[in-house]
Length: 215
Image (cartoon, rainbow, N blue to C red; front, side):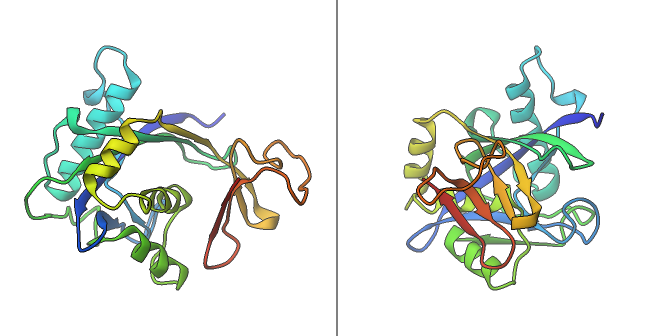
């Protein structure tokens, strides 16, 4: 059985012209996320683990990885948990990943060359538009996070809204034949057949632009 490890991601937010902006990093053209645009983050290491609390370890990892990859130092207590992602069972490299959000600190982004080949502050709507046109490679957790953040006009609004809700949990299942990523609440999640008015919680990833259904 494939070992499942824990990882953490930090979505840094800042106020832009009429909308919030997030920091996205492009990974080198290798590995599981080769060429993809992602948020800073990485796997939890022993140095991150304190008192047996898995969320605290993930929080520490998110801060450490962000500092290593971008040079930006964020206080662990400023992070708000946004979501928790579990991977499809068929993946070889599997990580349970915590997504946190925090207000960006002042300072220049200094990317780590071995981990980051490009970086850019983007409005979530612009990032999704560029992805839909084939200009950015995104993965479903990043795409869904960007879609979620479009609802917030400012960083303060985002942090308040996220703080008021329990972290969203996504245990992903894939329907490769139909080009779908499925989550709890979708009528086809446990193998059921689609009906015209049935509940949906899915992302159509078979072709661009991707399309999210949640009802």
